[in-house]
Length: 265
Image (cartoon, helix red, strand yellow):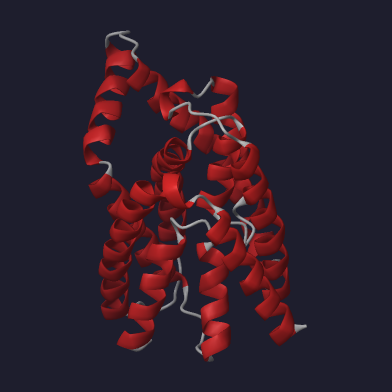
């Protein structure tokens, strides 16, 4: 992999991981359109670690509070709204962890096709718009119930299908439960920390046990560029989402789906 390909794919990953437009779909489509070979497992691991670093940096203060409160709840039996949210994020990660273990191979072999990506982009884009259009709640992430946390986690598991978008489907679920746009985005991004961490660990384990030679330079470029682009994306999306809503992302998804059908059908 040359440096330009590494930079482009890393920036695509950093932006599309947090924008509700599907990072997995874009990482499939960009090589298709540009005629590049598949970037391979080592690079995928590197850019996922990069987006995880972006989350850890941006939410460092809130995560520090959540982790501290979680330990207090375990060791001292002190329960606060922070410890409750921390436990809910762990509960919400269970569905995607189980789905990844059960269906990863099937998804890798059968669903990484442009026309399937077009279908999920369009369908879940419309669902996202409907939830945003009629979900007018003003609750924040600390108001999420246990059942809602688990259901948002179930929605996150659907994002294993390329084109769905992890952030898109979890923000959609949050809006459906009456969270404000910014609160739904924050819950989605906080839920991504254990989710991406688990996925990165799983992919890293496959990398360690693989005989595929590793090119370290593209991996380093991918890690740094995905972390930086992801950090910028989180910052501006959290600041702007209340004003811009989710309609622009729905339009983008529908246009991209139409383009894919026109090219590959």
